[in-house]
Image (cartoon, rainbow, N blue to C red; front, top):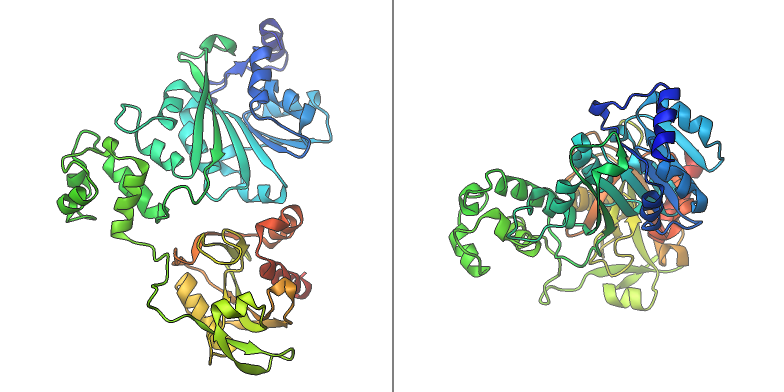
Length: 445
């Protein structure tokens, strides 16, 4: 849409750009096409667009995408978009993107994000849609140039800060180009920039507690010119010794530390147990026959290597809203690392009964001890990893204490989203969970 056409359209629909909503409409069609091209949208992609405005990017995304969800806060623009783009593959959602439930996107096989973010709320929207783990595989953000420079900044530069570290922890960021203010109506006071963000391989950086990492980073940058050791003395009273050990300047400021160095600090406060000591005896699993009758016990490695029949438990924990907690399995698991699984799950140890194992797994993985109800027993098969599984359920209204040595991440999900997610992305899940979920849904349709 040309500049003159855009101005006429805005007059026709009675829209005067609202500064408080950050409304600046892109009128350069060639630039719009270039931006959408950077997302490499294909027929299997579902596109989420925040702030579609008059549809400059929406129209182009619709050309190749399997579907587009455009989230627009201004009711007048929602009506214009619905009248203009009457496509079966387009949904216009009237609402605030800050309140959008990103969990619904797991029901799409592949999701990409487009956003021309209002300057006044860009950081909040960034952190919301970049929350880890995410169903989104690529993000294209248009935002204020100064904000974009912070996202790609390197240590020891003026733009490097808390936002840099919090985004780069889980993502790779590319600064694609500066976008001049002249391509927008009305013309903003500063230039914008386009950044492309992709997920970082979870194993690329050392693991640590992201919650503690973010707390340390925010504290470290709370007084940028102050020495880091003085700001985090409460968490690290032995700062000087640790700084020497990590080859850091004891008088260093927050901006001088790289992401791996921040992670190292985090792990000194709350280390994650990642490996079993070589001196520790190997776990012994009960080995059973086709009727789940005990035959003896064998080491974990032998049970898995020889596909011996053995026993396991799965627990589904629900909150008062009826949502089920799912965990993403640790990156160190020997089977199905980083796959989504039941709230808590694990093998029975030798000499342990099913009820005992379920209670133990709940304590070890989620840090809770609650009454459990036995739901069903699943026969051993290839789909369960040759495990007889007893499935339990429980209810909990409180904060879970995730064992980060066992669980990469976790979140509560409405059951209907889980149903659609399994259909759309079956490979996201550990096979044993899928079998347990089928049984659960048969009993609780």
